Image (cartoon, rainbow, N blue to C red; front, top):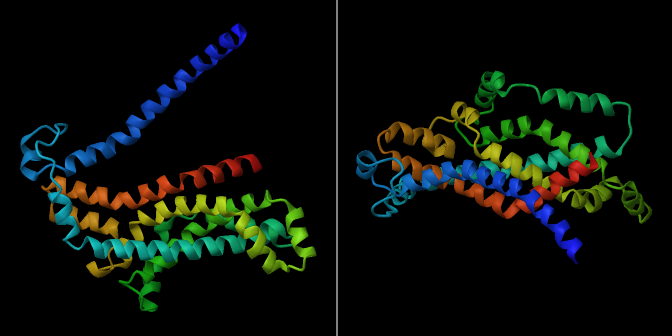
Length: 282
């Protein structure tokens, strides 16, 4: 018993730096969000007259009311529709492309995979003008449909790359057993491989979801009127209209980031499982 007590004591001491690092990281990551929340609960007059880090004298949700009644729902719906359609098509297309690259042997396997990896290095900004011209010719300019194509195209290479590595780690015996039971390649994909890839798909869903939700460049170039604006453009517009009303802008930032924070909170277990599975299989 004495030896067990002595051995557990050094182990607990080793955890002290870990907890200290976690605490410091929490302050670094949570500090800006705490500051945003603090500012959003102040009035404009209190913000201009008081210190930046003073607590609000009166905790008021007036700024949130102004944002919610000022067309926020339109921006929010556009962002949700863009994210939902883009992410659904992106994950399905990535899985369909990763399956043959990871499970089948054919002559063009490596060249195609190499082209996908090379596509990851293409900067999105050099395609703004061609995509702009294409959206006009397709008559989808100033429409959220114009944002879906770029969101899928520029997130597809890294998604296929990650899913290919993930699917390579799935046991081939499971797929062979399904084929013995009469499943063809399509049935084996949708009934076996696709369900077993849920952790990897969840990881990609959270990662790509954050990227698509915060996408600004294409939204700025491919939309023109407020009816097609997404939330990043709403922040840009509010910054121009309410330059001096910092608490109102902070309230908008809180409401804009809240869906992604909730997505991470409820999906973090899937994210960790997917990352750990990929690390082990890699």
